[in-house]
Image (cartoon, one colour):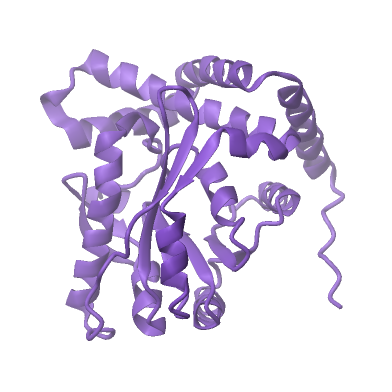
Length: 303
């Protein structure tokens, strides 16, 4: 039996680990609503301190909304977005100490139709975006025993090991997105065995295709579409939002129907990827404050 890879012993990793365990401990001591309030307050502060990242958020909002938002409205929305993301992380820290309570705050809808799709025996590719508390969404989806998520580790080695430790706490099964040929092989094998594969598709991808997203051209991953075409697995949209009462709702949509007779046609593939991005765009336009605006989604096109 293969032994699990040991965690690093260098001082930098140990400091990261100690700080994280301390935050998780104190977040676990606080009520969930207090964690959300603390996270939002820190998020507004971080927005003022992390000026380069804050500027990326403001630039993205300007690019997408143009003059429909005043400078003051963009600033308020960007600061609120930082607050949302910070609250999301503190919420995750809280539930790392109280995962048994998650079902009381997170509702899953559409799982019956997902199970009907899986019953066909072809597996399924679930595509989503960085909406709501997408980290807890991944935890919820991975509770389905046959689920694996394609995951991109941070480039920083110690941060990557921290991510690995966090995934181990929830027994999340993942496939690393690099090297790409290895990722494609294991993802395809998982689907052909009837498994459920999750992919977040709304990050910039220099090796993908350029499609419209939020009214602008954006480099987009083709992985989910290609795997669905090659394996024959159905595509299923999924997204998470925070409701007004601060609870979370994860929704599986109906099967995302795509043409099946063009696996090697670049134009057909680009059309499928474009339609998938339009699906994500619908969620973002409905809940703009809950999306990851600080990501350089349109950087390649703007260059």
